[in-house]
Length: 171
Image (cartoon, rainbow, N blue to C red; front, top):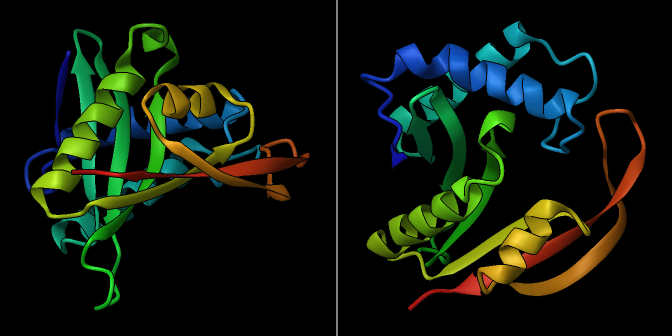
């Protein structure tokens, strides 16, 4: 398994795999911002936008690669405001179905935390569906639960779901 930063200048060939993994996640019920019916074309357009944002320095994207291609991804989104040079959000953690149970999420989380430290980002924030496998991953990795908001997000099928917010202070 290789965990590395996605390079917007040289990694365009990974876009179809990233798009397919994201569609798979939404079809599988992941609450990552999209609803049922999210298509490969929709996902490809979203990823093209993320690559453009990465090229502008607005986001850094880590990708997990294995023998089968893209196994997962996570993004570091630095806070944009002048009074928050120490803060960043963790976003869009996804692991391909074929790679689950192989610690890919844990490796991506470790990698994105190291990337944050390298950039001087010492306060991280993320959110996920309460009680989800992702929530358990974050708690095992030492993330502090800040609180829950009931009916915060819609699942892909339209059902309301509670969201838990987490923070982690890095040294």
